Image (cartoon, rainbow, N blue to C red; front, side):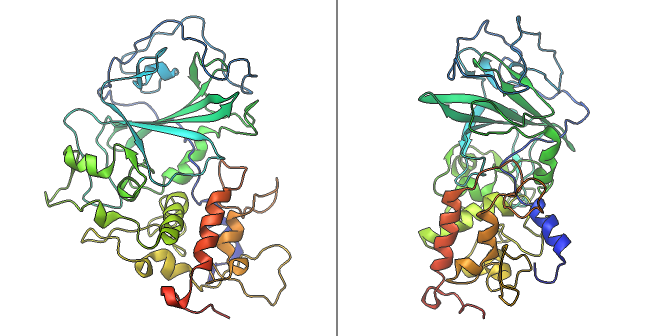
Amino acid sequence: MSGHPWQAVVASLLMASCGGCSAQETTPRADPPAPGRLGTHAGAAARGPGAGERPAESAPAAPRDPPPCKEGDTEPHDLRCTGLYSDFAARSLAEGVREFKPAFELWSDGAEKTRWIYLPPGSTIDVSRMNDWVFPVGTRLWKEFRTPASGASRRLETRLLWKTAEDRWTRATYVWSEDGASALQVKAGVPHVAGADGYAIPAQVDCIRCHAGKTDNPLGFEAIQLAARGAGGLTYAELVQRGLLSTTSGGPLPSAAALEVPGTETERRALGLLHANCGVSCHHPLGVATHFEMRLNIDAAGQVGDVRGTRVYQTAINQPAKVRPAGAPPEARYYRLRPRDPERSTLLHAMSRRDAPGAPPEQMPPLATRRVDEAAVAAVRAWIEAMTPAAGYPPAAP
C-alpha cells in the first residue's frame, strides 16, 4: 500500500492470515509426555455422522486393523496415536485434554470447529511477552473441522500442533474417512472434499505462511482471543485461576477486563475479526506485513487501550492504498480505510472478493478459503460507516 510497490502489496496480501492450515512435518526429536492413554484403541468405531456420503477425494481408506501406536513416535500416522482420545470409538477425551474456543475465529469457509489443548502436568505457559506466549515442551493442540451433512455434522479433518522440543513443532493433518471410523495423516491435502460444498484441505507445507508470524506457533490460543467476551472452555481467566500462566519476573498478570477488545460493539466486532484473521499471523511489528498493522497489542502495563490507540486505527484510516478495485477510475483515490466510505476502502474490497485461478492474489484472507466471509465483511462495513467525527474519527480524506 502507501510507499510500497505493487509487488510488496501482493506479497503482504498473500502472506495475510489464513483460516488455519498445516505446515511441513519436522524431523522427529524428543519424546515428551503423552496425555491420557496414548495409543489406546477401542476396537471398531461405530458408523459416525455423514454415513452414506461419498468419501473425500484422495482421503485414506480406513485400516482393517488398528495399527500399533509406537512409543516415542512424534510423527503418528493415525489420529488415535496423538493422545487426543482415551477411547477413540466413543470420542472420549484423554485425561488432561481441555476444550477451548477463541472469541474470534479464523475464517475456514464456514466450517464448524472444535479445539483442544493439552499441557504437560506441572507446566506453565510463559506469558512474559503477553503478545507472544511461549508454550512448554509437550504442549499439544488439536482443531477439528466439520461441515453440515444430512442434518448432522460430518468430520472432515483434525489438525495437530505438537511442541516436541524447545525449537520444534510437529504439525500434521488427519483426514477423516467417510464413515468416521478413522482419521489418517495426509501431507498433500485434499483439493476437493466430495460432498462438502467445495471444502478443500490444504497441504501441510502451507501452514508456515501463517504460523511463522508467531514467536511460538499457536495462533488462536493467546491473550486477546481467550480474554474477550465470547471465549469459551479454557479461557484466560481460568488459565490465571489455575496457575497455568507465568512470567519470568513473577509479577502480577493483567486482568481479563484489561485485555478486552476496546470500543462499541460495532468497533469490537470489527477489531476482533481483523485481529484474528489478519493481525495475529502477519500484520504486526514482527510479521511480514508491517506497513499495515491489524494486531491488537498489549502494552507493558498489560493494557490494550482505546480504539484510537490501536495500530489498525493509526496505520489504516485515511492511509492511501495502491491496491485498487478492478475498473476503478484512474483519478479516483482509495484508502485502506476511509471513514464512512466503504466503496473507497480497499481492505473491504480485498475481504469481499476471491481471486480467479491464475489471477494476481488480492483476496483476504488469501489461503485455505474459497468463499467470502460475508459476516466479517458486514462487520467491517458497519464499522467504516460508523466512523463519524462524533465517534472520535477524523473526517474522510479527499
